[in-house]
Amino acid sequence: MRKIFLAGIAAAGLLSGSALASDLPIKAPLYKAPIVAPPYSWSGFYVGANFGGAWSNGGLNIPGNNLYGGLSEFVGGVQAGYNFQAGHFLFGVEGEFDGAGFGHPVLPAPTLGFVDQHWTGTVAGRVGLVDDRWLVFAKLGGGWVNSSATLNLPGAAWNGTSTNTG
Image (cartoon, rainbow, N blue to C red):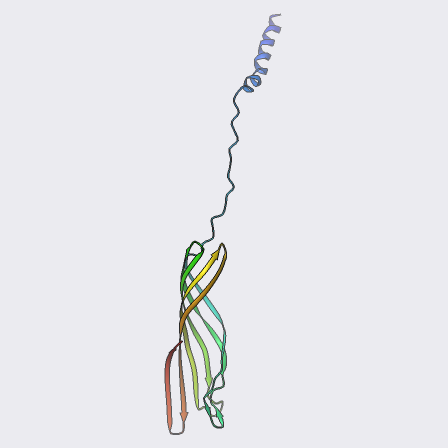
């Protein structure tokens, strides 16, 4: 009988543990707010490269001869700028420098001269409206073009280089 009594006390002790745990207070679940991505910002420096083509037309008309009829060639270079975003407004500045592969003989044969555009550069300001990843802007600035020309006439030669603004 003593063995049954001790076995009953041991069983009561083992099985009563969960009954005691049921009286403990329950912790409230932790609220985890969803992670929201920070708003997109257009502020900061940027640098880039560009390449493409360009075309020009024009002429130096001498009766019976069109010494320059236009051309199409390669243009490539770099640009850099800075944007500052204040709320829904954007302010920025940008500069660009391109080398140009324009080169055109004045007349195919005999070669009387050559027209060549060496480089172009621009500087511009930017004002825009921002809505997250959308940007609508206006840009205003100026540019420079460096070109040269050579004209070989019987008994005379003329060379000229100029940088024009616009």
